[in-house]
Image 1 (cartoon, helix red, strand yellow):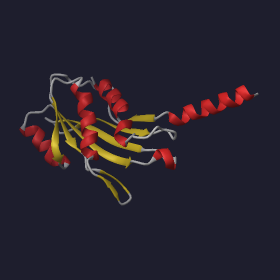
Image 2 (cartoon, rainbow, N blue to C red):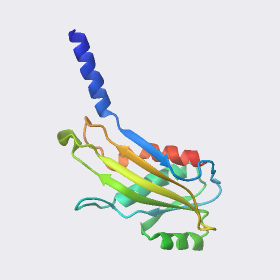
Image 3 (tube, rainbow, N blue to C red):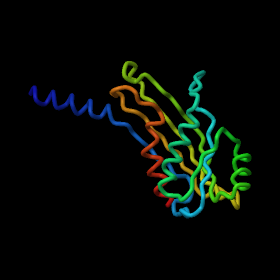
Image 4 (cartoon, one colour):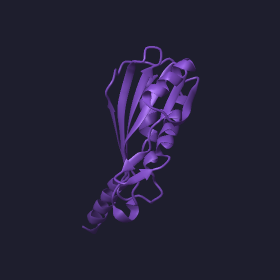
Length: 172
């Protein structure tokens, strides 16, 4: 009996440590991007939760997206600061990029999960724009949520690395 109780506790705690991810594609699932076309990745406005502004979260999200595109595209670059969609598209056109990646942070919660039991959360929308036509080719919402029993030190951006890479790999 004692064995089953210990086994049950271990199974429960294992489930609490696992991060969860969700990828919701809202665009054309069959598109394939050309690796030879350069990619311009804009920077989202920083994430907010209530009155808390997570400074630098927009740049962090764009760096994660850059890492994923750099593995698939011959040329990928991020903006230096936030730009509106129109400004980012104009910049991409003027600099002969093939694709504009326009991320938007939808949710960003960096919690003290170890002692509060409240998980970190991050959600971003990524739109892929054909620079020449200005049309959206594909878009996705990527969500991540940390497990309850973590060892600490995790941040919302850590929840995005794997699902963003999977999404970008599907595009090529």
